[in-house]
Length: 292
Length: 135
Image 1: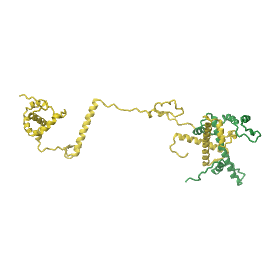
Image 2 (image 1 turned 90 degrees about the vertical axis):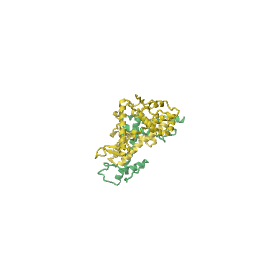
Image 3 (image 1 turned 60 degrees about the vertical axis):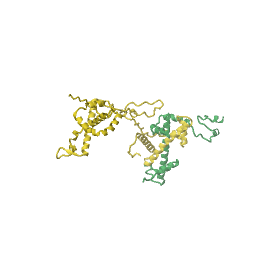
Image 4 (image 1 turned 45 degrees about the horizontal axis):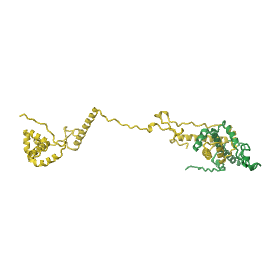
């Protein structure tokens, strides 16, 4: 036990120090008896016996004391314990007087187990009244007190605008790069293809077609005005306004193209009259007043 | 009435009524020890009070009087030294039994071995068996 240098807790050190003291005591008693040296096993045996003797005396004396409904052991309890353990009590004074000649060694051990002051943080909570004083103290308050931490959300206008702008830029960049990586690319530089890939443009077969045809939005408006001319029902209040503004030339040209698609528009207008979702309404174009 | 006569008639010693003719000697007398306890304040046993107190506390014994602790440590000391003396006698017996030389009387080099300790402990009813070697 004394050779192992593994991690010993302060309680173990406490225990070991006292054990060593007992060994020293045993050695001094052996020297007093007349022995020059002793086997280690013999010393260990006697140390163990001494320790268990003291413990047994304590336990037995305590039992006798409590047997008579007391809590404080007295001399009589000790005497009875000694008698029970087969000890001849009358020889005890004689022994004490005899061994007064022996040199008294074995210095007492010192206490060490206090936590250093530098490590304690904050005031420990004092004991409530129902806890006796010899119990250990409460731990430091930082071990059980928790304060929830939360950050205020950033509401600075500038910071938020910056964040939104940078996020949008990052998203756009990421998306374009993804399209470049997965689709066809064209390169501005002759020999270096991978540094600045451009998303390849898909050329239309008839490039000028989009310029001639109206946009989807305008087509829808045209269909609405045509259907309102033909039907007797008025769909919305805005339609007479649309009729008045449809004076421009190119729109009349387009209406001739659109009249072929009137069959499709009828069903659509019926739906539009039921669902008046403001987000699905056609865009109101500003009034174009042509000076004639 | 009979125990009342015998009690406290011998200076603190309880004597049975039939023992006045001297057949039975009182085994236990408490007054000398009380006096002895007073003397114990000057004498410090070899075992420190802190060590004895530590082992007594582990057993649940809370001593109010430090002299009680000294008494216990003294009793434990005597216990061990009695065993040591018995082992010494065993050692001496083994030495001089075969008639060794008288010129160098054998009280110089006594070593306590397990062979001497085991019979000494056996007389007290303690049987120890230590292994000779560890595998």
